[in-house]
Length: 162
Image (cartoon, rainbow, N blue to C red):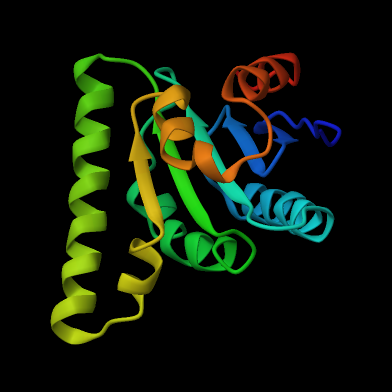
């Protein structure tokens, strides 16, 4: 487990082959630079696959249209260092379900654009996945990890991201 960098905007911890990032605010250029630096360090220190897991709790506001424009370039940059990007929208409220549905629609549209028109954004979308919680994420990548899932959950909780 790597040390857990903390800023007012997010907290990150690397456990096994997973870089967990818990966001406390919506994405910004400064936040993107900080996260990319941490993920880059994790990539250099991790042999084998590296998975990025974004944790977004119920209190996180939806990003403005201006901030949404930062998301695709951020994902493209991020996916240069990780094998796949996993976004966890925690909670079962209507707002969280709507956020998951709208994100799912954007990813599906990007995948369809790739199949129909060969757009590069589809390459990004093929490696982006949505999850309702961390156990669901771990079920998807668990067979590629070295530590047992319960140990990863404990370490992530000790690192302050769960």
